[in-house]
Amino acid sequence: MAMRPLNRILLATLISIAGLAAVTRAQFAEDALRFSLTNSSVGPRTLALGGSAVGRAEDYTALFANPAGLASIRDYEFSIGFARNGVRNDALFMGTTTRSDNKNTVLDNAGLVYPIPTTRGSMTFAMGFGRVANYTSTAAYAGFNPGSSIVRSLAPRTDLYTMSVEEERDLLRSNIPYQIWLADTSNGYLFPVVTDSVRQEGTVYEGGGVNHWSFGGALEVARNLSLGFSLNFVSGTYSYDREFVETDAANIYASTYAFPYNFDRFTYVSTIESELSGFNMLVGLLMRQPGRYRVGVSVRTPTTMEINESFTDEGSSRIDDG
Image 1 (spheres, rainbow, N blue to C red):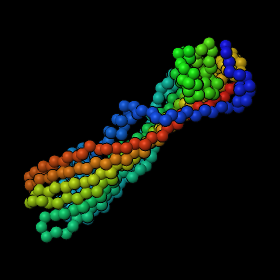
Image 2 (cartoon, rainbow, N blue to C red):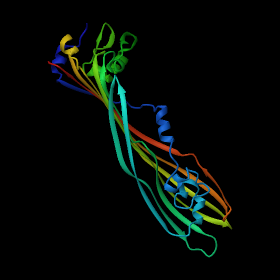
Image 3 (cartoon, rainbow, N blue to C red):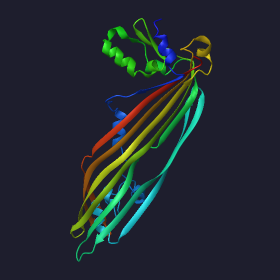
Image 4 (cartoon, rainbow, N blue to C red):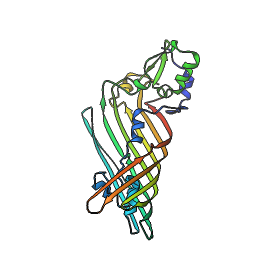
């Protein structure tokens, strides 16, 4: 086996840490779905109507469903609401069930309506805030895995002879298991040192959400016919924190392998922090016959959204002696 120079090993500390960064990383399909799927229902009244508020919007939440409904409001109005979000998850892994919890309290909605006194018809302006998506989630698991290790997927057996000198250097420089002595090279191959028989445990926490800040107004353009518009500014965050730990719980590596392969513990931490901003516009029309019917129509423009994301992958290893 061709090993790296011994003096490099001796200079290494008992705990080695390596960070991995990249210039760009493409988003996955679930990332696009996460930011595009939102709950358009804002406020308890709209929720009670099952989101069908286009023809019955009579408070500040008309900004998010059909702003033309603002024209029917004759009184000043202020509203605020909070939400308590909680997720409890039981995960079964290798015969062991692990429970995890994640809770938070956030401002869910707020609104202000300001009707303008008129001699005929009506004119009303409003502003509102609504949390249209919530990303609070969690999962945790733990158990002994006799058949696999995450190191095998992070540092799979790779033929280095098929690579150029620059490609091989870049691969080894950015490979976390190789940098922290959990993978090595021999006969032109990169291969994992830790392959199975490890205790695995992990925790994942997600947080953040999407907010809509809306400003708009409505005008009664004819008897029982109103026209309204609203501008919606999108803001939000998303966070992802995962810690994965593998340990030589059965002392297989400690009793079988010598330094530096007497692996004891591997910790792998991944984080994602996203900030998003966007914009859309909503135009609505409401025709009503008091005591008989209401007919509402609204058209929303596509939402243009910008997402700035930063991420880190970090690994640390510990060996039994040396």
